[in-house]
Length: 96
Image 1 (cartoon, rainbow, N blue to C red):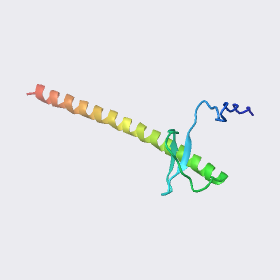
Image 2 (tube, helix red, strand yellow):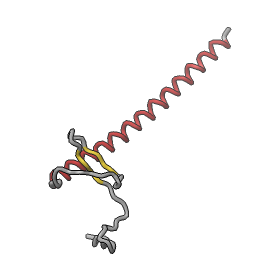
Image 3 (cartoon, rainbow, N blue to C red):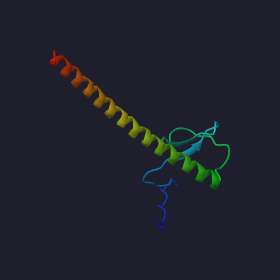
Image 4 (cartoon, one colour):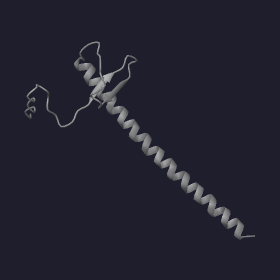
């Protein structure tokens, strides 16, 4: 296991990158990267909450990736269909 990066002179944790997972009052989970946004919490997260919250955020990221892939495929298929319709229209006009 790696040794954690030492704290700065003012006690600030020195890290390469970070994000915060929060559970909103409505139960939704969100990963936040804006550390300048104030956050007020009701209680310190339990290990179960940390595990579930991290899992929910990963699941949302995967769902977003799949939605983007599906949207891209639909746009590509729509473009193919539009091109086929244009080609058919041109072919029909040339038969006159």
